[in-house]
Image (cartoon, rainbow, N blue to C red; front, side, top):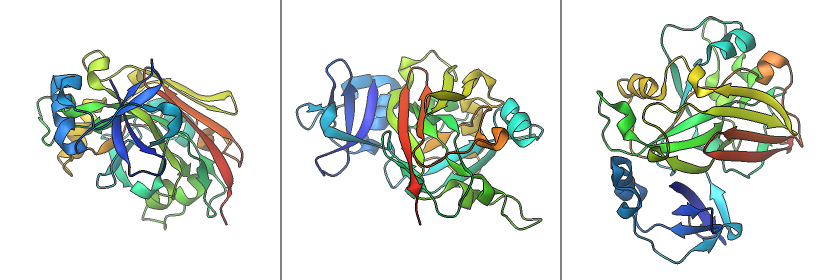
Length: 283
């Protein structure tokens, strides 16, 4: 099942089931926090009721599939080849995680804002896990996952390096620039994938040229391990999302950063594609 967060002709955002066969969405009645745990627990579409008739896909705007009350958690340094090739670093002894501002998010087809403070705007395709439970079972962390979506963790690399000496990277400036980070186009529920942490191909193309091509099998820590790592430090809430890291091929390693007008397509096998165009630099 595909679950999208949408707006229709300027309406307030709503959640819907996506019907690709008929190219329409079916608006869901009720709050995410009420029905998502039931879907996550395995009830499927029987957990849902619908508030209106179907709406043509062409008439809706696909929004980031996360409500504004929820957190965006990002796990980094999770692909060894990415660390070696793009950063020249060794694998850390444990995962690295931080928060991204909600205001950084854009939908599947929205423009990527080119922030005025950076000259090195970079791309990072990622599998994103969506938490669908109010409680996380330490013995089975994947049971809390409603499903998965696609992320493009756009980063300002020069700002990332600008942290004061001895303090470290400025991840807030690098990762939370307004309206830069694509998420979507929808959530594909966990039951659509084999049990365990998903093994999926990730690609990112700029103007049709593949820049990143990896597989989640290359992750140092799988989705369950990342959830467990974060949970014991700062508890997840139903509706939070977790970026799980990016494979090699980012601009930091290749020297090829994003430019105004670039068409950026981030895809995860079995889920979908974000297609975002980089805007002119915002001054």
